[in-house]
Image 1 (cartoon, rainbow, N blue to C red):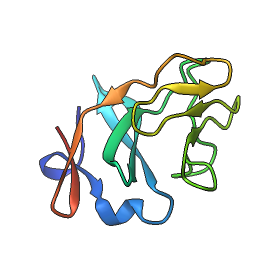
Image 2 (cartoon, one colour):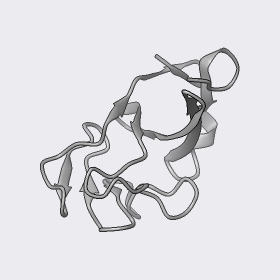
Image 3 (cartoon, rainbow, N blue to C red):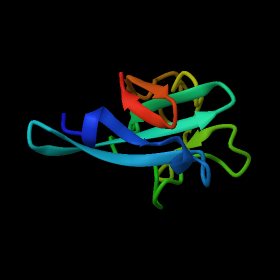
Amino acid sequence: MTPGAANVLCALADLAATGAKEITLLKAGAPYSIFVVRDQAGVRAFENSCPHARLPLNGEADTFFDVRRTVLVCVNHGAHFDPVTGLCLRGPCKGERLRAFPVTADGESVLIA
């Protein structure tokens, strides 16, 4: 995969406005979309693909959380996901999970783990 310089995905400050940031990486030369989320539990990342229909969760840039920032929401089918585990709590893929992507926070940046 080819992220930004030195495996930096984004700055922690990039997550302030919406709690999430969509990032496109290259995997075997093809675009691969993930998103990074930050809340009181820390920083995590998931593949930007709903397990139900394999469509991106977001409809607008960096918009993944509900208005209270308590669950991640798939704009296509209304599925709700736990932002810590990626488990689908409600919707057509209930019981399935978002695919986690390994990241760490280091100072002011989010890095590929």
